Length: 201
Image (cartoon, rainbow, N blue to C red):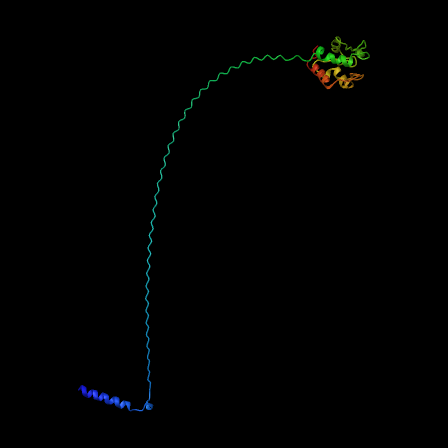
């Protein structure tokens, strides 16, 4: 059986080799059939279930009990015994005196001839050394309402007005004193203070 089949095959091959190559007719038959069937089925099922249960329960119980008991007992016993014995013996200097403080001034500026010294006593006032104080305690001859010196009050002393040139304001007259020369500010102040102190001798 195998021998017969081989012979037939060889015969066929030999027959094929004797054919004309030019008489070949090629009939291509291409049939492409593409069938694409895409079936996409997406089924997304998302189920989110959030259950938040927050339960905050704060219970604060503050109990403050402050009991402050302050007992302050201060007993201060101060016994101060101060015995101050001040024995001050102030010997105030006596006021200005006529003999020590004022007479030297009056003699220098007024007790000369033709004024109130050397036998001349203008206005009846002599101011020579040792005699002037007695006469100053008398009333003025130019302004009888005033004393020549009123102890304690320069404004009521005619001598003070004559030294300041205000004699006319109290009813007096004549020239100012001193007639010649002048008193220093200190000397004038001494006379005023002497009168205020009581015109001591």
